[in-house]
Image 1 (cartoon, rainbow, N blue to C red):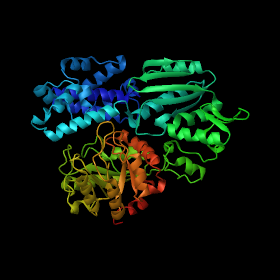
Image 2: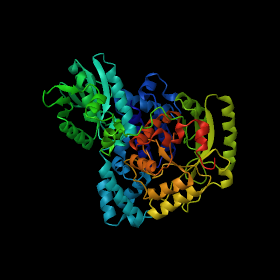
Image 3: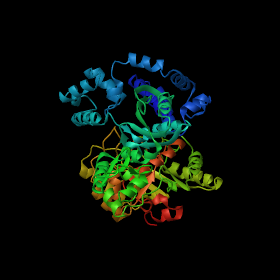
Length: 571
């Protein structure tokens, strides 16, 4: 799918236009990028069908640029913008807190053109002297530069998983291919990946390799052998393919899925049992014959343990539990019955309440909660008390119209600097669900951030804390917060902690999910969708929950509506 590639192109155009202070067109390109990023279908197919302009926010001008890019792989317009812009927008834009307007300010006043120049200016104390920035901003810029260096080679799972699944689906079309599997950190659902590993089985590997290297989305062929090949997709992700004999597929899938430490322990256990484990199978040391290899299950069984789910293969105690038949039964990818955070046209979403409900029903959801933004948060069209009441009427109307799905009314209320909420309790108590989150003051000290959140949780109307650490993967580190104290408060107050499935968030992350489960805190998996297509992000949240060893019972929205509602505060 070229969705990510096209969305990134439109956002890049918006960055250059913002640098040029072209506000109107910036909004148009940002909206178009958001729509395409969240599409569940391939933008390439929409383009082939001649339906680009039927997408919300895609007018004639943007459609023509997408058309040119998909036809040629290039866009003259972005090339012209780059030539006219005297700074490295791409590099500087990866530094948290440095947007196009700040880049323009730094260029005008300090002649900063790239990250190297930015770092030099910050170390010389020049940035703190600029109006609107100051010493704190300067220190944060230096921290962000270091963070960007550490994460520059990693790709968020949410942007890589679709590409991996597309490649696997494409390979399955070839009749010479018997089995295909995604391996590596992608299969473990790790939040970021370095590259994508694909395994396939075939009696004609060279034909599969040729087929793989000629896929439509291939930008470069990095290596090509008789049974192995590496390519780079147009969106910049590297994909490695290995073609194997079918009778060793399980052993190879196991070998290329588990992290290094997990695999080392498995090989040690094999040796203790007089066996030898490799990507080519599990062998007897005495006879050198294969004793297992066609499936992962038979390899684990021969090693004296239960099957370990891919998301758990991180050497975190899972092997010992598998040996003693004590592995938790993880939440399944089909266990979710409803989505409890999403946004509509009432605030900053792209679709109506009815459209979101119909799309959720198609995914098999039995209920959803509309949680548009409220109060004075600097987000377009945030709801006030009057508009909340008006929205309730529309929700009631749609509930009467649609069958098979129930729409709940909620809000995403902002936690203010002192821990108070930006909507009165008299309004919140009338809602079905209240989701609270921090959207400002990310650089506050740990004690203050923690107190803010705990105070919000002590409000009897707050049911859920959304994206509890505030991070944006590869873009912004989590704010400094004492999650042990937060989980203690959640347990005492009955507040639910969210696993936000949005690709850039995946927050809570896996290690925090495991800590929450251990503390006895209930979780909810929500998408934070801003359009109908983003509802499919739920898979990322489920993967994160599985990496955190969460069971079905740990997650409230695996329940039917009545039971789920009874788990909320004061029910």
